[in-house]
Length: 318
Length: 138
Ligand code: B12
Ligand SMILES: Nc1nc2c(ncn2[C@@H]2O[C@H](COP(=O)(O)OP(=O)(O)OP(=O)(O)O)[C@@H](O)[C@H]2O)c(=O)[nH]1
Ligand SMILES: [Mg+2]
Image 1 (tube, chains in turn yellow, cyan):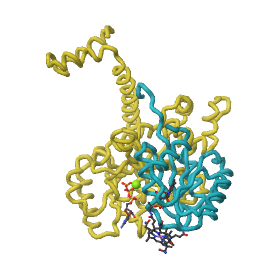
Image 2 (cartoon, helix red, strand yellow):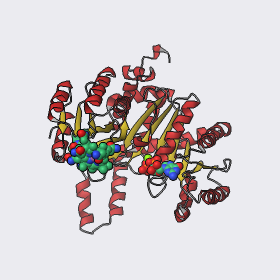
Image 3 (cartoon, chains in turn cyan, purple):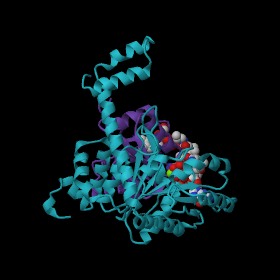
């Protein structure tokens, strides 16, 4: 990066590979600090090329264990790799216990790895609000591969597609009925299926079932969703899982789909950011309390009140 | 962007250094801090001093909490404090819990440990201590 561009000092430290600066900026992005905003603006032109690999799937299927195995594999290929592990915040206290790190053991002196845990802080959909910004900071710090673990949940987290260039949906043998109910959702998000815990009985069956589902076609007709069996305990299938991920990334480049996906993700991101501003602005509108009264008295319904408010604001009379 | 900005949550690393399998206390404390609204990074068992210091840096925590019931505290804690200073994390307050005899506790305080809690310590006191150490005394 040419020094003539004059980045803010924190951005320069980030680009120079100062890990502490990176860690602080991530906190800043999570907290929506003005300093971090400034850095994000400055680095934005230099981001957008990272491989963002999302791992989604039900609670306890082995997402963190797989990330641990992938970390070692990707490092053995000589590439820098970062991990963002998201866990839910308690809706009651706002606090959380972020436990994915338990599974991640790596040489602590390896500067080619960076691991960060994040809480959802009330954001729905399995990810934290600032995930995309955190990923950009990691990319600016030289982490061209970022593995993102979403909140384990009963449903598959559709929002992973909002971040990831490649979404890996992780399942385990004997999810039988669950797979059936997930089916529609799964196809909306999976670029790669992973049947983990394939050391347990029923793995072949699960793999066949999924392969059959995958052969019915995916959202992207040009990409046939591969099904990879893995075990982190044996271990087995980890190089194959990485090959499937790489194959999808290469497909994105050769087909031109990377740009298409990025356009979709950025559209969503801008919409969401604008929406939060609109909502903040609306909730401060002094006319709001008086608009509630006729609805409370059941003279007009909520939809009518909202529509009138909208129309009046558009005419600039609010 | 919320209209009125709330204080961001306090981030705490809870780790168990050394070969110590007693994890009840660490888990109980992690949950208590979570219930007080903090984000607790639970690093789990058998952490080396190097891994703990690395995690504290990457996670940019406000406090580091160590739980040791194995008796190895005088070997492990000074090592961690020293590494933290070396890695420019010396300003992060460290508090400790577990089986720590009084004489050792005195020495550890001298070395920079901010607070020490033993068996039966009240969770309320631990939460208060964490808030104080993070500069958020209520
Ligand atoms: C339960 C227990 C076990 C269970 C552990 C289960 C588990 N997963 O945790 C089992 C049976 C496995 C076990 C095994 C052993 N144990 Co044992 N065990 C205990 C016992 C009876 C209670 C510990 C406990 O869970 N307390 C409940 C929790 C909630 O309390 P706590 O951990 O003290 O935590 C509180 C505070 O210390 C503090 N705190 C703790 N951590 C942190 C962290 C922070 C950041 C903060 C702020 C506060 C804080 O807050 C907590 C809430 O008040 C203690 C005796 C005792 N009274 O402490 C012995 C004891 C700890 N064990 C002991 C020993 C020697 C062993 C063994 C080596 C063999 C043996 N003799 O049994 C093995 C080793 C296991 C291993 N791999 O390390 C000795 C340790 C001696 C020493 N350090 O000098 C003790 C003290 C018994 C004794 N008097 O001899 N043990
Ligand atoms: N038998 C077997 N167990 C595994 C395998 N991979 C992970 N596990 C175990 O499954 C449990 C959950 O593993 P994690 O990696 O924490 O799973 P996770 O999906 O990250 O869990 P959450 O983050 O809580 O949703 C642990 O007890 C692992 O040891 C595997 O390949 N085979
Ligand atoms: Mg996990």
